[in-house]
Amino acid sequence: MKNQQTTKHDPLQIFIKANGYSNAYDILSDIKDREMMKTIAQPAMVFAAFASELFLKCIASIEVASVPHGHDLKKLFDSLSAERRQRITVLWDRSVSLRADFLQHIEQQTGIPIPRDIDSALNNGREAFKLLRYSYEKREKDVEFSLSDLPIVLLMAVLEIKPEWKAASLRYQRVTSSLGHPKKLGE
Image (tube, rainbow, N blue to C red; front, top):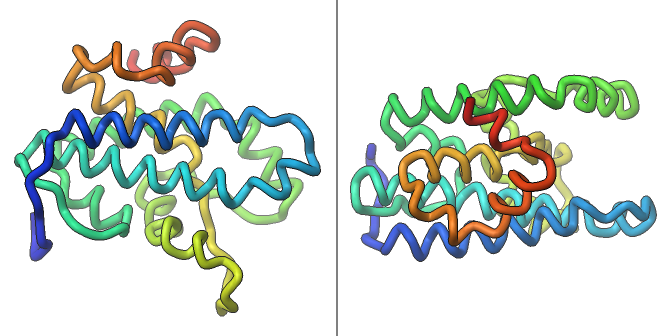
């Protein structure tokens, strides 16, 4: 890890916390009421961003037994080993391909292009956790967040390293039993 402060923490405890925020994001994302969704979209994105941050810190903790400080998702991703970044990129690309029609539909409705590659998505949403929490403050431009798939991608990446943690992941159990999406991601 380059020029970052780090602290030692138990990776399983980080995983459990990340999984909790990921589950909260999942629950909020399942709400079908359009008016309600308008009011909870940003809180849901905060949960997704924080879950992603914690999953990245969990992976870093597994790899080098320490956790980098900060909320910058791109820096956290870049702090991982090249092998791990490559595997996460493969999982991300599969996830994006499974949702290609949905992403195209969103682009058509909003007129805003959604980056498909993980580096661009991370660059756009690198400070999402911080910026979304303070979205009431005036900014030169809106927060771009196209990382809604990142928590499940990172969950799968962690569980490839630590398959014994599957029992600790309600989201993994729920998604694999109902949608099969993570199974397709991990193929």
